[in-house]
Structures are given as structure tokens and as C-alpha cells.
Length: 171
Image (cartoon, rainbow, N blue to C red; front, side, top):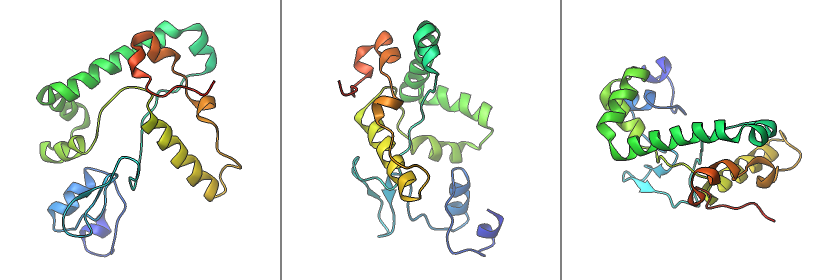
């Protein structure tokens, strides 16, 4: 960040709010996870062809899934409520995030508004899994991609709301 702020580098791959700060200092944004800026105009990439596709996931052992599904379901219900707040009461969510993250309001707005917030197991999550698996194979980190069915279960979200599972494991 220091080298970029001094103009000592030609490009930087980084995260918000650092990118916001560099652009505020006169830097140029070329690409985010879903938008290209190389033509001078923002070009939103289609859902199936994003430069970067990330999802956050809740990880649990199979033992927890099998023996403590209500505990996991309670956590997912809390995440559903938090997602509803960030999507439907942005001022309240921003105030809470600013207290926790201690990021200035303008930079936080750029960070939050660049993301989509949703809960569920969707085809987009599986696309992200496949993208990352292909990348890991290409750099020889894994010998073969794990099957989504071996990584994701719909059991917990289906306890809360079956519509949260728009992807189903192959039978």
C-alpha cells in the first residue's frame, strides 16, 4: 500500500478499503470481482463469467451436522437475520459495521455496496467451488477437484427454509 501510494508500483491487487483510498488519491481501478473498468466505463460481468467469484461458507464437521443440527441451524438463522438487515436496513447495518470494522463511512459504503448478500446453497456457490477447484488443479495444489456433493450439504438450510437450497446434490 505504501509503495502504491507513492507511485512506486504499476499495479496492485488488493482489498477494500485500501483500493478505495488509492483511487481517492488518484489511482485507477481496473477490475473488481465483478466489474471491469479498462474501457473507462464500468462493465459489469455476467454472473457466469466474473473475474473473481468468492463466497463465504460456514464449515462444520460431519459429526456436528449429524449430532448438532439445531445448533448449526440457530447460527444460520442468525446469519439470515443479519443478511436481512444488511439488505433491507442499510443505515442500521452500516452503523454496526462501522463500529466493528472502524472504517470511514465512504470507504465502508464502497466495500458494502460492491457485494451481494444472500444466504443459501445455490448454483453460484457451486460455480465458485468449481472455479477455485480448477485453479487449484492448474497450479498443482490438488490432484483432482472435489465433488460439490463431498463439500456441501443442504441439510441445515433445509431445516430453516427449503428455498435456501437452490442447488441439490446429485443423487
